[in-house]
Length: 138
Image 1 (cartoon, one colour):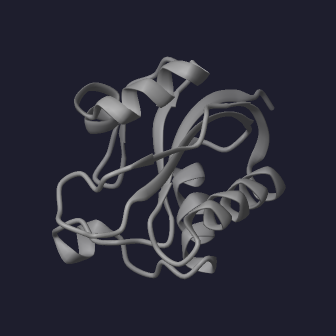
Image 2 (spheres, rainbow, N blue to C red):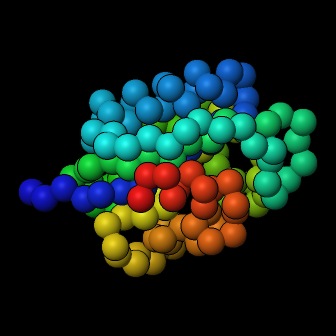
């Protein structure tokens, strides 16, 4: 089976965000694939909703054998294990979160389904902080 290069963006703004990011990175390496490159870890203000809690964000590039949908399922499992039981689509708005892991790029493919859109449009083209982090690992 072949490996795919995938760029992920992680964010956290609840409890101990830096520790949450570290925990998520450890889980990704154990369950999904090797981390090849990491961006710097930055602090950002919430985007798309009001909150007094800033986010810690990081982008990573991994190598994985998971297909896009299987990868999404594994990432959702990591989020669930870490305490995030419902994502923004459930609430129809953004909220503070213990961890958020988005698939930004998967090789050079375009993938469209009800659950997943690759490349991730908002993070790749609209959010300056995300574009900066993604550029560091591409």
